[in-house]
Amino acid sequence: MRSTWITLAASAAFVAAPYQARADDVAAQLERMQERMNQLEDQLDATNDQLAASEARAAEQQRLIERAGLEDRSAVSGLARFLEMTEISGFIAASYNYNFAHPSASALGTQAPWGVASPADTVNGWNGGALGLTAPLHSNPNTFQLDQLWFSLKKPATEASRGGWGADIVFGTGADVANSWSWGWDDSSHIGSLPHLYQAYVAYLAPIAGGIEVQAGRWETPLGAEPFRQDRSFFVTRGLVWSLQPVNHTGLLFSGGLGESFTWALGVANQNGSTMVDTDNSKTGVGQVKWWGETITLAINGMIGGDVYPALLGIGRPGLPGNGNPGTPGIGRDADYVGMVDVVATWDPSDELSMWLNCDAIFTHGDGLPHNTVYAVAVAGRLAVTESTGFSLRGEYVRGDDVFDGSTVVAGDAAAMGLPTFAGATSIDLFSVTGTFDHRLAENLKVRLEGRYDIAYLDGAPNRFFVADKDPGTVRSLFRRDDQVLGLVEMLYEF
Image (cartoon, helix red, strand yellow):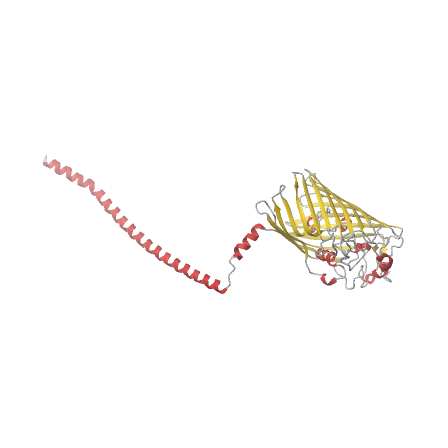
C-alpha cells in the first residue's frame, strides 16, 4: 500500500513538472515585458520633454514676431476663405482680320478715319465704315490684334451668404474700344495696354419677395442678345445691332423673380453708357422682364435717359463715331434723352441648335438736337455639326430715319474728318451677313474662321460708305464703296 502511494506521488510530480517549467517561462516573459514597458515610458517622457521645449521655443518666436509687427494673423485664413467663396474664370483671344478692299498705306496716309492725329491706334480704323458701326472691335484693317484678355471674379449673393460681389477686368482691343466710349475719342493717351473695368459691383440678396438682389457699382446691361465677352459670342466680330446698344452701366440695379417662369430687373444709371460721372442732373432708367420656357426665352428690355450727343445715329455711346462728335464725352442737358426698346428671343430646341432674335427701336430727343429714329433687327444661330465643330450664321438690318438732318458734322466738318458729305441724305439702310466656322483644337482651345459682308444704301446721296483703295489725292475720296468684305481668324483659350 505504501509503495502504491509513493508511485502515485512520483507520477503526479512527473506530470506537474512541465507545467511548472511553463509557469517559470511565463513569469520570465512578463518580467522582460515589464522592463520593455519601463523603457518605452522613459522614451515617451523624453519625447514629451522635447515637444514641450519645442513648443516653448515656438511660442517665444511667435512673441518675437508679434512684437516686431511682422505677422498678419488673418492672411492665410483670409486667403483661404476668399478662394473658397470666389468663382474665378477667364479667357484670352487673339485674331487677324483682312479687308478685301485692301486699303494701302499710300491711300491711308497718316490720317485716321475720324480725324484723330497719327499714328492710328487700336480703336480708330477703317473697317467701321463712315459711321463706325461695322466690326467695331476689329476696326483696323489687315491687322493682328489681342482681342480680349479677360479675368472674372465673382462671389454670388445667396441665402446662405447674402453679401456678394463681382468684378470683370479686360485687356486688349476690346478694352481700348470700351474705354473710348467712356473717355471720348480725343484722348488717345489711354490706347494700348490699359484695362477696362467691365463690371465691379457689390451685391446684397434681400430676404423679401422671394429674394431681391441689389447691385451697386458697374454692371452688365440687360439689353441686347450679343455679349461683349468674346468667349460667349458665336462670332468673332460684333454685329450692327450690337453697335447700337450699351454694354454696361454705372449705377444701382435691382433684380428678382416672379414665380418660376419670370424674372425682372430695374436699374438707374448715370447715363446710357458706362461712364462713372454724369454731366447733368438727369439719370437713365434701365429695365427688363424675362419669361423662361423649356426651350424658349423672351425678354422685353428698355432704357431711357441722357445724354444725347450731336448724332448721326441716335445711339448712346459717348464718342462713338456714329454719334458724330469725336472728342466730346458728354454734353450737360437735363432735357435730352435717348430711348430704346429692345426685344430678345432665344430658342434652344436641342443641344445641337441654338438661335436668337434681337429687335430694337431707338429714338432721341434733345434741346435743338436732331430727333433721330433707328430701327434694327438681327437673327443668328449656331449648329453643332459634331461635338468639336460648329457653324454660326448672322443676318442684320438697320434703318436710320432723319439721322443726318441738322448734324453739324455733316454740314461743316465732313471734309476735315475724311467723311463723305452725305449731301441730301435723310436716311440710311445697312445690311450685314456673317458666317463663322468654329472648331475645338484641344481642351479649352478653339479656332474660329469668319467671313463678313456689309452693304449700305443712302437715301438721296451716293453710297460712299466704305473705304476703297487707290486714289490717295484726298482723304475724302477713300470712301468710295457701298459694300465691304472682311475675313477673320481667331484663337481662343478658356481657363
